[in-house]
Length: 228
Length: 105
Image (cartoon, rainbow over all chains, first blue to last red; front, top):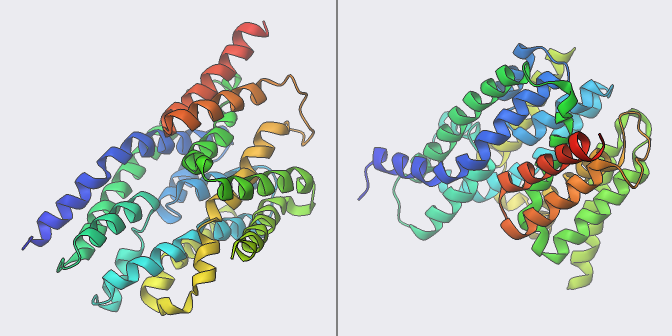
C-alpha cells in the first residue's frame, strides 16, 4: 500500500508537465494586469483570492474597460461554473473526509489538477487516501501559479506598450481551447459564442461577456437534444 | 470598489469549487446539466477571443488588413497542429510583431 506522502508526491509529479503551459500563462496574467493599469498588489491579490488564470484576466480586462463590478463578478461566475463538474466528479473520492478538510481541499481544485487526479484515481480504484493525490497536484499548481504571476507583475513594468501585449489575451484563450478544435460539436458551440459576442459587443454594461456564453450554452443544449 | 469585486469574485470562485465537494449531493447535477457544463469552455472563451481580434480599442470593427487577424490565423493553425499552449501564444505574438514592426514600417 502507498503511504500518504508517496501519493502526494505522485500528484506533484503528475502535474509537472503542465508547468510548460501554467508558468507562461501565469507570467502573461501578471504582466497583463500591469499593462491594464492595475496596482501590483491588486494584480497579485487576484492570484491569491480568485486563483484562476482565465477568470483573473477577464476580471481585470472587464474592470479596466469600464464594466461594472456586477458584470465582472458574474462573468467570473460563468467561467468558473465548470468547477461544479470537477467537484461533482471528485466528491466521490473525497466523501470520507471531514467537512473542514473538504473546505480546505476545495480551494486547490484547478483544471490541470482535476484532469490528472481523475485519471489516476480511476486507474487505482482501491487507493486508500486519494485526496493526497488531489492535494499534491493542487498545491504544486498553486505555488507555481503564485510565483509565475509575481514574475509577470515584475516583468510587466518593463514591457513597452508598443509591443501590444493586450493581444496576448485572445491568444491565451485560443490556446486554452485549442485541444477542442478537433471536436465538431465543440467547434459549433465556439462559433455560436464568437459570433454572438460580435453582435452583442455593444450591449450595455459589457454584458456580451455573459450573454454570449449563455446563447452558446443554449445552442449546446439544443444540439444535445437533437442528437438523441 | 476593486477590492470588493476581487473578494466577491474570490468567494464566487471558491463556492464553485467547494459546492459539489462539501455542500451539494452530486446526484443533484443531472446528466443533462453535466453534459452542458462540458461545453462551458467552448461557450465562454470565444466571447473573449472574437472581440479581442475583431474590435479595436474603441469598440469598432477592425479592417480586414488588421495585423491581429493574421496573428490569430497563424496561432489557430499552429495550435491546431501542435496542440501546444505555448506554441499557440508564441506563434501568434511573433507573427503579430513581425507584421507591426517589419511589414508596416
